[in-house]
Length: 112
Length: 113
Image 1 (cartoon, chains in turn brown, green):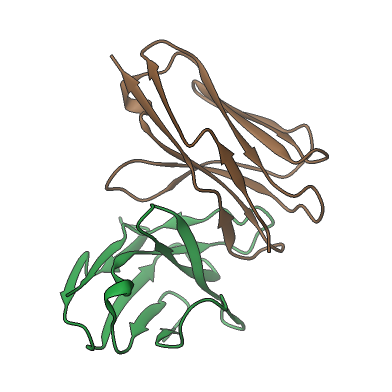
Image 2: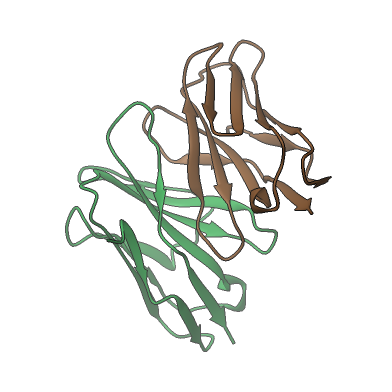
């Protein structure tokens, strides 16, 4: 069974700080790596889907990198804002085109 | 326009009852899913379904069953509800692409008394 791990479990930063989280996954039989943002009382929303080793994607102040050979992905947030406070999930499908196996998430809290 | 919708948003019921949660997507996606968010906020896959194949997570009790009247709907039926079934249930859908990006519904909070 695919195991997706995330660290840290939670993180508290000050407004303006830059931060990053880690997602690790088995490097064998890799299909894709997803990052989702999940705000309290809402549903998860996709941030990035990455498939190629060395992929780097960016959306505003948030970016992600992927290393499929060593089995990890980093999510970076530059200049954190209070509205970035959320749980960030990474996930990977067990097989191509199948349901996602989610990590337990990193909960980010940004104070002003 | 809501892409993935679920009803009801909240469901409070007695132990032993049978209940259903409905899910509809208007994105034209081929595959739909049900996830359960446990008490630690961990999202775990219960079922994935397209018009050809149902994949069941083997840890899901057989009291839970998905029913798909058509490609746009995947309903979740739960028989003989137990206290431990209390959770938030999320429906999702995805297109048939290699990225498999998933679009989630707003969730249904089920409370079993």
